Amino acid sequence: MLGTIRPILILVIVIWVAEIVNHLTGRALNHSLGLVPRDAGGLIGIATMPLLHGGIGHAAANTVPLIILGGVALAVAPDRFGIATIAIVIVSGFAVWLLARPGTIHVGASGLVFGWFGYVIALGLIERSARALIGAAVVFLFYGSIIWGAVPQGSLAISWEAHLFGGLAGALIAYLLRNR
Image (cartoon, rainbow, N blue to C red; front, side, top):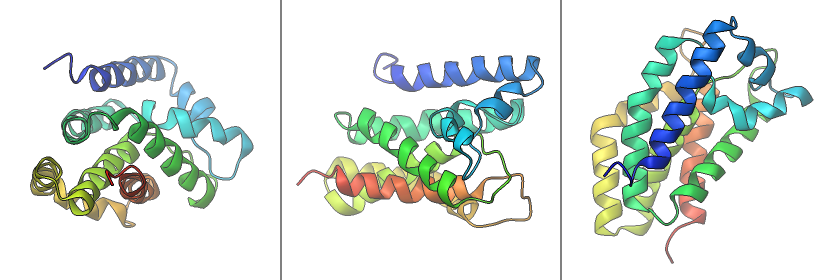
């Protein structure tokens, strides 16, 4: 089992190492590697945003959903998991860079969390295999309420744009990588 989810566990370890370094340096990584919309220097954040967080609580809040939703995405389509994950990060990150509020720094793995959510739900609806349908049902049952995080809320500190574009990117990637 642990060997199967190794990529997800490695991602979580990298996130926590980055969080420790970020904490010790006064969030220096966020300022130098965070995604800044429509700023050429902020393009690096497309790749690094999922690894950086706003604090220990933020990283902790993303850890369990990363393991669970990543695990389900991996179980539903193991042969497509790697490419789907990379594509979700790139597509959602570019959408955030292009369309999110200017003058902000976006960090966190929740775009990937929402991406895997959208990916698994969309695979269930598109492919309708037993595996995809069970995965979609499990994800919707346990995480269906996260869709409310993809709309603007009271706190501007939360990147609802990363949530929205992550979910949309996941659905798009599921469609593009679907079994025909």
